[in-house]
Image (cartoon, rainbow, N blue to C red; front, top):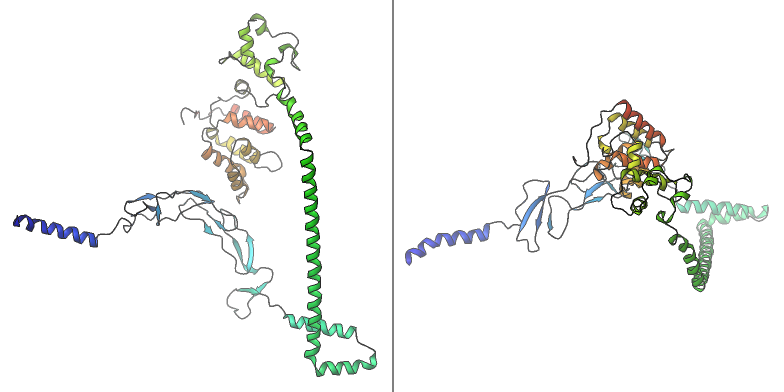
Length: 426
């Protein structure tokens, strides 16, 4: 028993010393500066994880190298326009824009670029410091004291309102004997005039506010009293749209712009199943009926302006599953140049039709480079990697950019070496 105690004594000593000297999980730093430590609420279990890589215009919400809780989530947040920026892919926070310290601002700060200042021109209201000729330092221009301006105004008022010439000598003498009294009196007059003007402005603002409240209350009362009639009017305006006939109820021989004779394909096959296929009730229509259906629906007023997949395959010489990112470089550059032209529907309308978020559109618009089409393609590669070239051209057709569509067809006919990266390969 005594020998067992002797053997356990060193083990107990090691455990006790480790309890006193061994660092806790919170104190052990991460090995890499681009990692952040995540701990539980008691700081007993911690682990390191890599920080995010945020694109330009975005910064990480939490600083790398710090300790965060498991409940906190790392994410890239957009920088604030005019306050901070991020000009590269990094895991850092958005950096502050900074000021120009009296120098002229050449370019304002954006979410991807800092403030650009002139180094040889001062801003309005600033001038170079003559006391420091060896250094270019801009300082505020000195302003004349208020008391001096008031005294000059007082002297001009005195000279204008002087009594007859015979008393001018006496007035000048009195002013010379007690100048402080004269200037104090004129300052009091100026203060009284200022207070009176402020009072008039305040009364005017109060009257305007009261009138606005009266108008708003009147409009609200009228709307409340006429609410039933308004509801009936809205209901009448909506009902024709709800009761409008669908393309299924339209007879095929009275479609505007179509021939009065039935098509040859339908005359040979007249059973109800083929009519169901034409109206869209069948789950797998034949290719011939699908093409006829697309042409008929294009002729119906109010039908969708987007071409069907069958019509797209007939109209475009490239395969329907070719991805936008796989088109030839020359065609890529030509489309970028044309959609960057601000005088025609271009990159902004394409971004909206293709479903890009407003934040991405704003980031493209605020970019300092004029080639907005290039940045639209970069955003589509990241956010919509499986977007097909056919879908992209369909949107161009909807925007009436026939010049770009014809350019795409011409380019495809001249150079048929298209990298066929399909949706299944990506």
